[in-house]
Amino acid sequence: MSETCGDHIVRSFPVKDGRFLHHWHKANSMTDHALLSVLERIADSLERMSPKPPSADILKHHDAFIWQAAMGTLAPVEKVSGVSLSLLRGIERQISQVMTNTRHFAEGFTANNVMLWGARGMGKSSLVKASIATVNAEQRAKGKPTLALIEIQRDELSTLPKLLAVLRTTDRRCILFCDDLSFESQDADYKSLKSVLDGGIGGRPDNVLVYATSNRRHLMPRDMIENETGSAINPSEAIEEKVSLSDRFGLWIGLYGASQDEYLEIVNAYAEARKLPISPEDLRSKALQWALTRGSRSGRVAAQFIDDLSAELGQPL
Image (cartoon, rainbow, N blue to C red; front, top):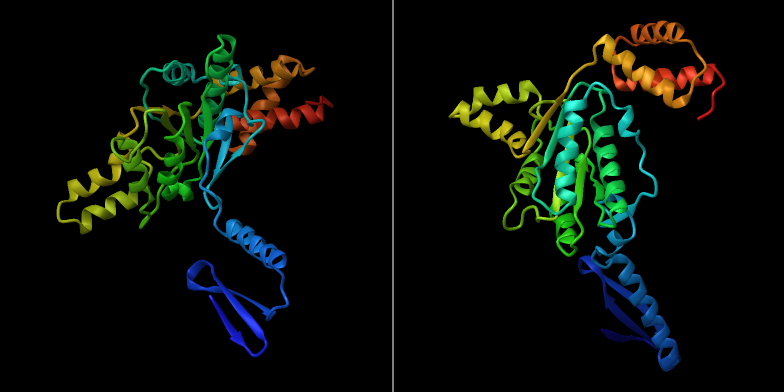
């Protein structure tokens, strides 16, 4: 749109939100080449304001990503933090369940969404990352496709439909990972996740699974569930609505606090992996004292103890 103002011409170009970008120049003073240059700069600006839809092409080049919802992009992660599967002790049954499910999915078979819940620091997120890394190593050794691990933040679950729209355009099998998943009162994001877990039209595509961890068995605080019984017309239906999200995970695996023997087994595994120059007696004594000061025994507490002990003994990583 153009209009004359004195000896100037005002050119208006529509941009977002009904606004216009105005460009003033003297009449007959701008060549076609100069005008083209201005228009190209305007077009570049508009493209930056309205980025292209995300593409799944990047999934061909990396094994791990973080979903950046605000940008609508998958940010590659070159090295995933975590521990070796061999260092996860006291949870052998849980490891077997997760590994079997992950292998089935990687090999092209049907598999279940996984919920790991339970005590803090017992290796829930470590198990997810270690199992996928182990299965990917097995797949590479056989010359077969690997899995893509995509982490999504809990407060970005409402953008799951946008992410799934991208993943539908690729054949690569992907595991969406949401760590420390839980919902509070008045939080409606659980409905977004539930609809995705249900699958079907507009839901989770066949090449996607969801692995999540939580400190809560039903993902919601007990008082939130109990409050529903006081206000709902049918209390049992209200509770079922709240806890039904957990039922969408085919594998529902609990990890519990470590006994003293399990805690010491984890400590010994870390100490052997680090090759720490310390006697078994001293290691045991120091490990128990550390757990006592922390007020808990878990894999995380054991790892923190070993980090501190390694520095004390002058043992680098």
